[in-house]
Length: 599
Ligand SMILES: Nc1ncnc2c1ncn2[C@@H]1O[C@H](COP(=O)(O)OP(=O)(O)OP(=O)(O)O)[C@@H](O)[C@H]1O
Image 1 (cartoon, rainbow, N blue to C red):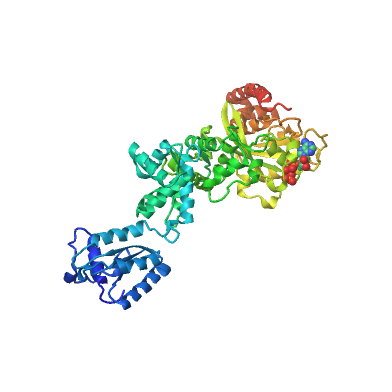
Image 2: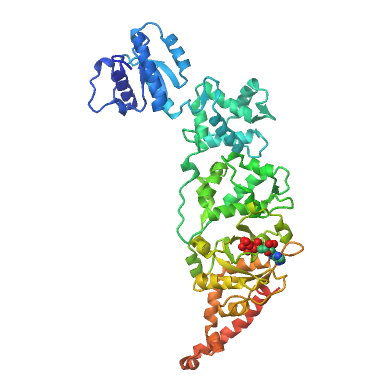
């Protein structure tokens, strides 16, 4: 403001308020220490005097500068109240009404310290709990962003999704935001205030969305913005009413060679979210139910391709199993996105966890799994390679129970290059994630090569399709530790000799791979799932093959006549060879029966 209205005196009295151990300065006593400058004061203060027109003008200019250029909360201060007998509120009120940016106004005196602590309180409140983002005084209503945020909060807190916050939900909400439940009487009082003012604010003895919004409008109008701000901040909102980046993306370290999975807690939470939205209890989400589920998101996260990535019911709606699979896929492929999505659903609040990160398990390094010969993981990735039209998509879709007929209904633009579902390995439920790799060699990325098992698909009716598989295997996987499986697709069609140096069976034998697995999705009902169980088993236990090779080495050497004179004289060699032969006979027979029996 203009000179001599008492800015410095006020600032000094506020500074001393900020440090309660310092005796407050009175206006006459002030000698300003050199290091105290207005910039050190946390709030911009515009002071005015209603005594002269000139001063008033200057104040108005300051208001415009502060609110439009600096964009900081504003309070109007009438200093030197000790000099006037009557309150100048009459002068202030029209200004306040004209400038909605003014949070509050206060009359005070730096001389007798009247209202100085109030001024400090209002200044602090204006910074911590500004009205600006919440409320529009002209419309006497909350701003649209605030309504949007509170609506999301209501939906997240409405645990049974019946559109009403019942006593339990209100108590949970209260406990979450304010660390204590409401007394039964206070709960009734809140409802009766809403009921008195809004006929549809209370329904079935619970608060409707309208009632909830009305209550917050009332809080703000009565100057209790901090209540609304506490709620908003608890649900992750920042000062601009956007969800905080720190809230959406809590820190999570993922070392290389580790994967990310949802833990039991997160699955339980997602299950409750599914139950909440599966209103007709058909264990599948209709398009309306999916829309309702993602209503708390700022955008729709799932496109139509998701329906071709996971299991759906006869109507093409995502089943419960499919819903969990899609979450598993997102967690595996893009854990940051998963954290963000869980944040929108209010995981940390509803599941009472520190952050979304506590719903994620980072698996141990795959190398350690291989060393210890056991794994705790429950998601395994299988990359599917094959030439153009060899039957890769058919192989992915068959995993979701879709035969060739059903696959023909899929629109090209809704096609997915992933499919994920569960298989049972020795009674344990595991997720197998299939990824169709684009057949162009130039496009192969590290992600295309990093997986737990590789499928090489060729078309038995196309004599040129095997060559691609052989080429991929030799170039990328021959020397890697990743197990590979050859798939002879479209096995219902007449088999034509492959134009390659050796037959697929010979190729597999030569490279110690299981024989080609016949596969077709051209079936009357759902295609067989055996192959997917085999793949998961191999992905889980790749070391079984290595161990077997070690045990069988002497036996195999003998078999192939690659034996030295020293070996022949060694009794351990003969012992290992005979053990190898016995193990070979027993395991070979078991594997043939259980895993590799050609169809
Ligand atoms: N068992 C089968 N009998 C007859 N036709 C089949 C059979 N399986 C798949 N097809 C057909 O073969 C074609 C190629 O199959 P698919 O799309 O699964 O191969 P793809 O390897 O995914 O192809 P792309 O390289 O274009 O992605 C499709 O038109 C499909 O309908």
